[in-house]
Every structure is written in C-alpha cells, then in structure tokens.
Length: 419
Image (cartoon, rainbow, N blue to C red; front, side):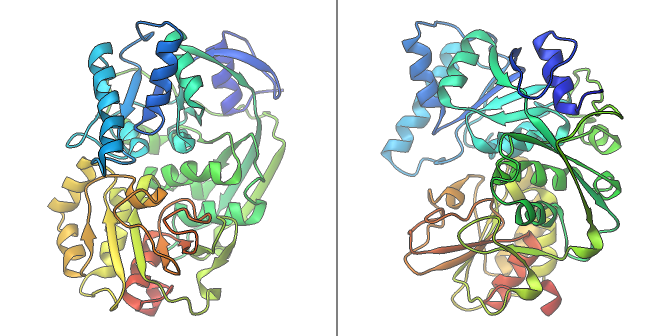
C-alpha cells in the first residue's frame, strides 16, 4: 500500500522508507514558530534546559502578533522578551510592528513555507501552512523549546481523512464555507488527531487564499493538520517568493485513508456557525433574524487580499447600519499596502469601518474589538466559543467575508444577495 501526503513527509523527515498511522517517530523540523503569548514560555524552558544557542537561527521564526502593537505593560514586556531573544540568537526571521503580520498569513507570504516541509508552531492554527503541502501542526511551548535546541521532535503518525469536493462553487461561496460545511458535518472532534487532506476538482480550482483558510480551520474539527497536494496553484503562489528548491508532494494512488467523504459544491451555500461552536452551522438562508452589534473582517483565517476584495465589493457605495461597528484587519503589512493601492481601504472607510494595523486583536478577545455583555458579533475569524471575543455573555457567529460585510450593512446576519 502507498502512503498519504502526510505519511510521505513524516517518513522522509524521520529517515525512514515508510511510516504507518500510530507509529511514534522522531523527525527533524524545518521551521519552528512562536508568538508573543507562547514564545516567552518556550524561551524560559530553553534557558532552564541550559541551552545557549538555537539549532539554526535561520529556522526559528518569532512573530509578536497577538497583543501587538502592545496593548498594555504586560504585553510590552512579553514582546520585549522576544525582541531580546531574537537579537541574542541572531534570528533571521523576527517580525515586529511595521514588518509584521499575523503569523499564519505572514509565513506563506514571505516564502517561509515550502511543500514537503515540517512546520511546528506554538499556536494551534499553525495547520494553516498545510495549504502549501507542508505538514504543519500546533505544539506546546515546551515542545518548541525542545525543537529550538535539537531541531527535531517526536510525532505520532496520524491517520488521514480525505475530503473531496466536486463541481462549481455557488455565488458568494468560498473556502471558508467549504471548511465550515465539513466541520458542521463531522463535528469539532470529527478529525481528532487525524490529518485532513483536501481534494477534488473544486479544490483544484480553489485559490491559495481559499486553501489557506481551509487548512487554518482543520484544528476546529480536531485535526492534527490540514493539507493539500501541490499543483499549479501552489507553484504560481511560490513563484517569486522563494529561491529555495522544492518538490511537489502528492499521495500515492493506492494510499490508505481511514475515511473518505465526498461533497457536491452545488449543495453548499454560504455557511454561518452559530454560538458557541464552529460545528453549529447553518446555511445563510436558514439563519433567521439575528441582529448584530459588531462585524469583524480579518484574522489569520480571512484577512488576505482576496478576502478584503470580496468584502469591499459588497460594501462599495454602502454604509454600515446604525449601531453596528465594522472592524477590518488586513492580515499583513503587504496586504494592507495592496488594499491601499487598490482603493479598498477607501471603500471600507467610506462604509464607516475602522481599519486596523495587522494584529490578532479581537479574534482572541485581546484588544481592538472586545465585546461587552449581551453583544453579538459576526466575524470571519475561526472560533466562537464562550468568551472568545470578550465577555462570556457575548455571542460570536462565524461567516465568510461577503456575508460578514453584508451583515454589517443590513444590521443583522444576512446574505449579499439581499443588498
């Protein structure tokens, strides 16, 4: 029997001819990522272990993005710790305010993720990078410390689930809707410690921005990672971003899967995840009347240029409803600049939105958009658990950028078709 994409990558990095699900291996890692919440813990463990130098300063990536720009003294101290460690270790990839972006949008943009690599990060949404054909997964801060020292880590080879999409996407449907549809189907633990491999003719036509969104939310189904085979879309995205050589990765024709699910895109309309779980999904036509106080467009899930273009197309010539706060977060400085050049920021501001510097901000209830008791938000972010965006008595609905923008105009959750 052949191997899946993930099995091939793990075998190659462990120096083995093949691996099987459930097998424990030690594998070298290509990139080690941490942010301003998780890196300080890893740095402390690094020092407690008696280490003096990281295994490779080219392969450690630190991005203060959660509470940056610093929202208070505590966050300023956290970011200072990263800055000093990066300087001490002469890290090649340290990104701070002005150069930064939300880590899971920044790494692909900077050409720091390549097909066939192993990427670990002390953040659960590290699985985003599987869109480029890498085995990318979230780990704990102590694992990051160990990897910074040794350049390798142990893994249990996951089983792989395959999700196949066929047909053309319906109007206003994007990668966000495909992954929400999956999560609504299998549940938040439906892919627990499994790799989620996406394929089918609809996926072949899906943009890299859409793929990054799907891989990002694999963790919301419990997945160990989300992953796509490399193809012309991957090659086009990487062109000009990296000078490093890379090879395409794809599953063998006779690879073994623990589960294969087939979906017809004709059956999928824009999805909305109701509180308080990403699997509590409904099609937008079945939402009913849900007034909102806030709409958030951005995050590592949907803050890329394609997302901003979609939102701006809906908002053009319109304004947000009275009593609704619309907050837009471009995911990186480069995306911000591109949106500026294309006139998207002008559209947002004329629609009475606030446009923020790149930051995780409201997604984790950190800053720049925290909800009060009883308030309701619709967001392009990835989680809507109790208290995720602020007060435990607030409510978060998840949707794609088109639905979120339309809802800001309508003052309630609704479809762009209503405008």
